Image 1 (cartoon, rainbow, N blue to C red):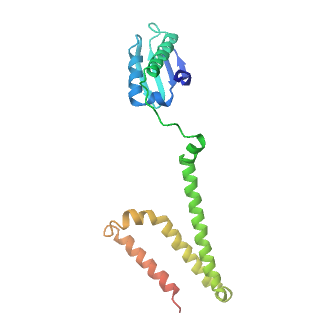
Image 2: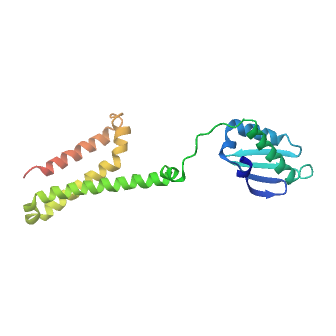
Image 3: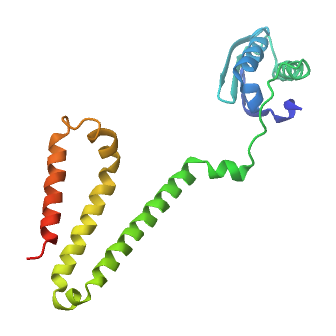
Amino acid sequence: MLTRQVILRYRAPGHARFALPYVLCQPEVAARLTAQIEALDGVYRVRLQGNKLSIRYQEAFLTFAQLARALHTAITQLEQGGKLPQLAPRQPPLARLKHSAPVKWLRAKFEEVRETLTAFGILLRRGFKHGSKLVHDPKALAFEFANDVLVLYLIRIHWHRIVSEWIPHPIKYRYEWAAVFYLTYLLVRSRLPK
């Protein structure tokens, strides 16, 4: 019974606001419902935004009780007349929570942290392969490690722009490509044995 799902959110003289169930907010159903309410004597404005139905009326012609009965009757007629669309069953709250924006954001951040830790692990393993370098020249190893971290950071920050802007329009972004080639040259040169 849809009328039990309608909630009165606000009531003042000449103004009432209701929260409607999702099925009543479908465009065809909403148009029928608002047309029936607008046809009442004393109602001068009906607005439906999202699931909020706002009705303005003149109390000299229509009381709140009459308005509530008319709304109840209109919803009941729509429900019994088979005019309501068959909607797919709603997802359980936990499934909706998994697909919500904050959870997606947290998952993306967790994935970024995991990728960063993996990259650091690779860099550390590479550094420990050169155990003698760690003992004899820790300063050079620290510089190499810092360079690797900087390169990974720059790639991570600019990856979206590289794929979506720089590759499709290489002439337009020629200075960015020049900087990439120069930094790559410096990185390779720093790795060459002296």
